Length: 455
Image (cartoon, rainbow, N blue to C red; front, side):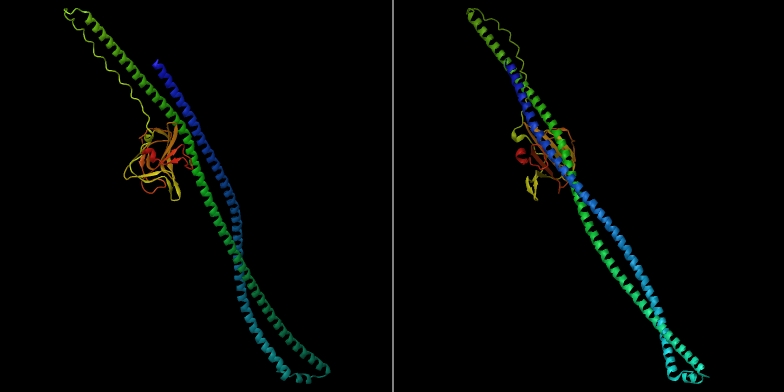
């Protein structure tokens, strides 16, 4: 009867345990899936921002290409203007030489003409006009001589005017070349100014491009971190399922051992009671027989002694769940140098334990490895999932020198996970230890002070 009651109680206990695990695991996994959905939404947002930034970069590259083409054209124009200026200067130098020679000839011829005209009109020169006219043989000869003198005078005048026109033409050409040189220099100044403006625009657009590329790199870094967290959340979901199954199996095995121990104890007690009743009945029979015998009769030979009863079998040792203060053990030797709270204007989600030398790190409780990998911030890190008394916990062991466990592995409390180190974003050898009451999430909103749980 007792055994039937015990079996029924065990069945109810296991059934209730299964109900607790099922309902708790559903809530926990729902929370993890919600965090995954939020993480995916954030990834989509970041990817959209990346596309926007890349579009801005493409537009900026087109503008830079146009600027580069303008700069090239301007540079070619500047070079052409410089070549024109150099050629114009060479023409001016050549023209100056020609002008100087021409002015020299004009000056000499002007002086000669002036002297000749003066002599012709004042003194008559080598042939006096009066003598020429008076020496005529007749009126016709006089007219011929007069016409000849006029022709000579006109020729001299024509020569003088031609020289004057040549001089004016040279001066005009000189002015035109100098004006062209001035215009070319002005155009060169404008081109140089335009070139400076284009270079300034290019410099500004390159600066914007640099900012956009920096922004894109930051977005890619954020996406990389989100992808890392997404992978961690996915591994966490698998680990939670495995950990709940492990804890459920362990609880069932513990209940079976407890039930077996109780059954063994009940059986031993029943056998002891039966032996005690048999011994009492035997003693009562012996007393009656002794009382019924005559007094003169010799006492009967003593009854053969019964063999000593076999020692009672020891009950199987039962597993006693750890108390609330003993769910977790200290993960490593060392001194707590920093606790949970605000630090450097950021939330420090755990405690730091520091020690020198080769210091092993142990699992604070039995559980399942969510992920064992190398993170840019955590360095060598191990995430563990624990399911204790219907409550999910997550522990984090960061900045380790090395790792001795792998993702998905089942570990026992006290098992070595690796050794204390200084990897990732760390300053000096220490263990950064986090305890989360519930699943790990990006915001670390489930982080609790681990010291009350392990002290």
